[in-house]
Amino acid sequence: MVNEEGLQEVRTTLEADGYELNVQEAGERVAAQIVAGPEACEDCLVPKPLMLTMLQQALGVPESSIDLRYPNED
Picture 1 (cartoon, rainbow, N blue to C red):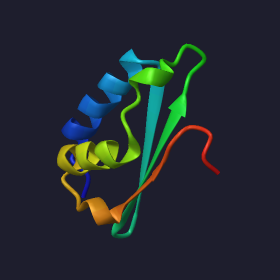
Picture 2 (tube, rainbow, N blue to C red):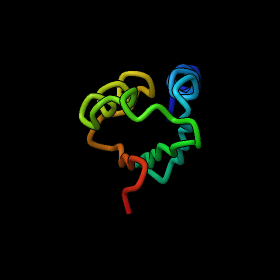
Picture 3 (cartoon, rainbow, N blue to C red):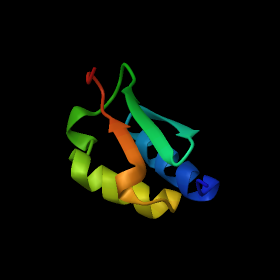
């Protein structure tokens, strides 16, 4: 379901700013969690709506099927 090549591109971009992207598929849903590393650039993380659009394009799944969690969200 998920475009692995697109996923790797987003991961590489986030890793350059000190973030890790974890993605799990669960049926028709995709759970994506961004985790901040100790050297993460807080100003480098785009607003959540923009990240959802980027993930939709990169992963090749509908934006409505992505459950995105940002650092420090419970």
